[in-house]
Image (cartoon, rainbow, N blue to C red; front, side, top):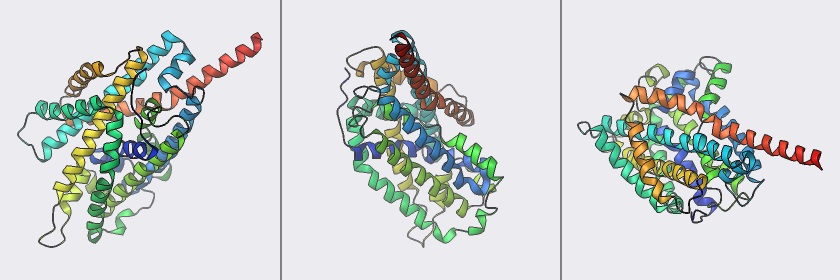
Length: 365
């Protein structure tokens, strides 16, 4: 058995919420503004509902084998060979692809903001080194770190948002339903509900205290992360009208540079970059840890740490494959649509496999 350590529900909620919040600091808000225009702040509502349903489905799966993670549960449902293939091809691949693309986007964003003349490979390697260290220390260390820093992250976001209130124009929210209520709802739901934290929570469920706390942790962490995303999108649209917001590569960085409260408080992007770096490093560490632990459990290895280095190298190489940042962002949008497979399709297939096994057992008896 892989030794992961243990931590409480508060640490788990902070860890998953901060990991999910990391996408808000890149170009993801601009993508949502392109979908819904002035109603961009409404797009995460449907995604939140779907995500909560996904948490509930995975909780049903985990209750089939309370002492195991979704990796072992999938193997028991599909058999050792098919189950191992499903875990490697779906769960591990999802962590690797999204982690690699996040690493590339994060490095490109840092290159465009502060380290303009540094090679992209050096920046990516630096952040990957932080991810390797975090993954090597384990999920317990990451969770306790998240518990210590989450308050500072929230205060930094709150200061940034409150400082922008003098620039708000409520007429920017009109028309109320943007480019169409049905279009905003369905496209926004599809764009916001594909996140890695749903399946990641199922991988580290035993470290969080077992399936007993899984639903509560999943619900609260998703409510926090989606709630902050809604507030950030509303702040973006209120500060700039939506045609202007579509032009920003890094919307939240642009918001922090817009702040002007007298001569001695303006452009506090240093606060944003500090928060950005901490949350980004935590995200990379957690995704790399999820990939290593999932692969170790699938291959029945006693320790996940030897897998961190090859998986980290693969993440680094995959992240450098896109030719530029727009290509990486477009590829990330495509991959996020495929995250529906481990988040929602996989638990449905596991439940169906258990139902068929139970039915065939009753028929045989």
